[in-house]
Image 1: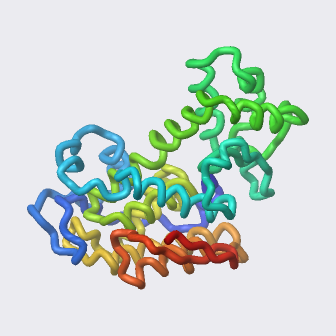
Image 2: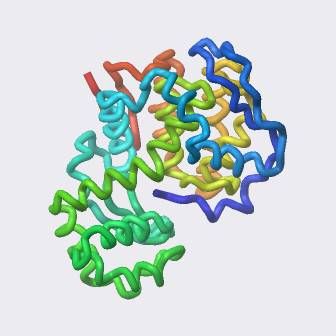
Length: 299
């Protein structure tokens, strides 16, 4: 995860309504007229609580599978991997580990868990609870010390080799997938369904959740969503799906550029926006997109 906590002062907080009414169809028509959460300076927190609670299980279960369909989930992970690691072979990325020089320390594994953004630490802690004595357990004290920084203190020179070795263990691969689902995939898809979004919108939320983190700060996922809702109503709140997703992607793009004015935003501009402007709201193959100047295709 490339958490953008450094952006807290860069993007203004906006108090706005959070529309969480019963989702509608892809044309943006609201269905059911369920209650919306009223305008609140804590709208991001309220949305996060609802996305992570069991309160709306029946409502979410009533919606089409969308990105949770196994074939769509596989496709989503391929698109994510194209942006994270320039490959569609995401199962070859369990053992990838590098420092990209972005201030987040080491980035590793299938969604880019980072030593500086807590999610890598949480992964290793949970894995060690279930599998004591694993090859990464000895690095937990150092991981706790460097959490929130880009420091390698206590990790070099052996941590990267230990990560690659542990990534050959099936249990650690399963732990990466479970943590991905718990922290990023499931809350993102749930929130998107509550907002009335189809499969593409669910992927847009998932990619943003991975990149910005499940944070309520202005540059975290829920903060970005809060600002987007100020610009356009969600389909669940009576708005149009395309218009809302355009607004969300624009707010997200601004957040990326606020952190680094020279950042490459092609995962938004020539991937997700391309799908949106083609009207591919169900994210159906064949797909063609570009990330970092490279073209990818899924037939």
